[in-house]
Image 1 (cartoon, rainbow, N blue to C red):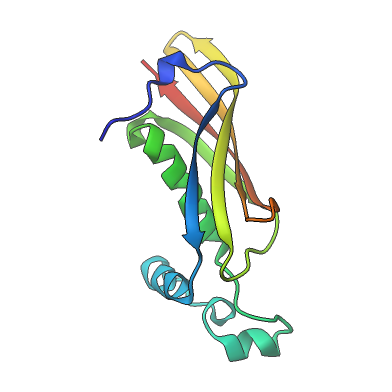
Image 2: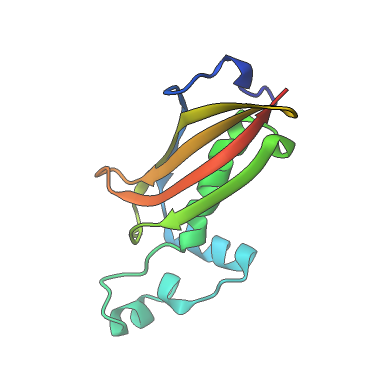
Length: 139
């Protein structure tokens, strides 16, 4: 896989976004199986309605998984030195998500250059669903 040349990035640059199709019920069921998170609020419409929701909604960790994919699209796993997220809003079923990142800072260390990114996952209405940060090593 061809990764992005991280050495060319500077503060303020954006990384290529990851646009995803609508989140389907099948996606939620598959993620529940893969993650072991079978909370019925994410996969059982009747349960969600009894809980006062209009429909099931996405696992927060699904958004984090998508954000991870954004990072591994631009750099190999061993370059990711730190990664964290904060859940901002519920992601509704059928939402079309976009993961994006921007270089906040480039730090020169004795062990090499580090790129600090701010990350977001937004839906088609530009509502922020997750906010995150990552640090990538550049050689």
